[in-house]
Length: 220
Ligand code: BG6
Ligand code: MG
Image 1 (cartoon, rainbow, N blue to C red):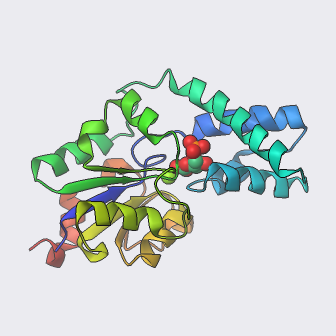
Image 2 (image 1 turned 45 degrees about the horizontal axis):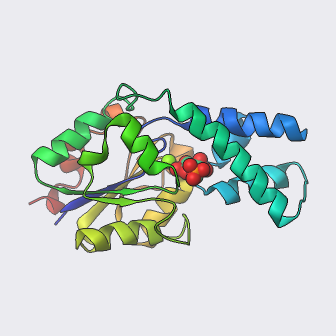
């Protein structure tokens, strides 16, 4: 029986991809690195340090560890500054409705995000109260596609993986959900999240009604 839901943040609850893009683009321009939307899409769901490595690999760049950490921190400063303008109007369409519905029906809800800025984002959205458990980039050391962040959420909710549905917009995030034996809902195109149990193009279609209809034998 499904008793809990675990949500990724960036790309599921709110769309931060453009802000991440702008920050990486600014850093890349300063470094003389090529960076475009196709590279940015590969960064979905992966940690900040893994992200800078992807960008450097794309540019055949290599730097010492201390410099990489410094550059990642610089990107983060730009990104965090951009979060100041985020408001409770900035949920992806449908996300707030789904979170409200889950609260009304008494499900347990966890966040399972790779971001170390997740709490800041939830505060900007005024979304903290929708979550019983907050798992973020500081909660576990192994990032997606490892299942650790979702296992952290289910464990803190006191649930087994097969009692939870994970919502993800990233290929690595759906991989992580499957590796942990969670049920999964993918948000986005077939080529990115088509391996999820159920897929919607956007959160607006991902209503509790639709999710229950698909997983009906798991809701009793
Ligand atoms: C994920 C995003 O949620 O968090 C990634 O999809 C991002 O794009 C990652 O790199 C880490 O975020 P942060 O805020 O810790 O740099
Ligand atoms: Mg995401």
